[in-house]
Length: 195
Ligand code: NI
Image (cartoon, rainbow, N blue to C red; front, side):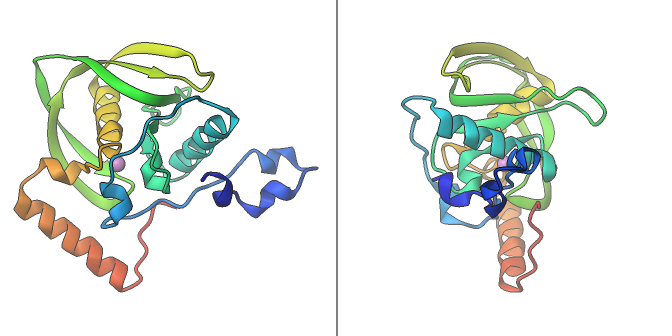
């Protein structure tokens, strides 16, 4: 599915620096593709690695700290995250089939936003620390512990793989207000997408 989303500049073989970049379209809510459960990846091949690279470029360009495959129309269990602040060295995480194996009892509220819900922010409470296992871009199993913003970002992106958005964690009243606002923006062709 990543193939049809390639930018035409990929065809220019003598310009590898251009070829290295491909920005994907980010789906904005409400959209049925954001409400679906994603399927596991059997093997991480070159196409998966390429998709994750493109997802990272798209995320940095937006800019955002995380992006899940369903947000670019690929219903597979793939996420990318980088919570490094501006000016810091990038710390990209490319995670296939991520699975939370442990969460702390302590929970913390954190303000969340989403590239699929532009300009909407709400407080969401989640476990403060998590341990997550996943497969990396070389098809190697990994396990990491995360806290703070990184733990928030991983849990937020993993929610996307279940068809869950951060607004599903807040009150129905607030959620409906946000979704009505986004629907109205879509109708008026006011594309506030992260591009
Ligand atoms: Ni999101």
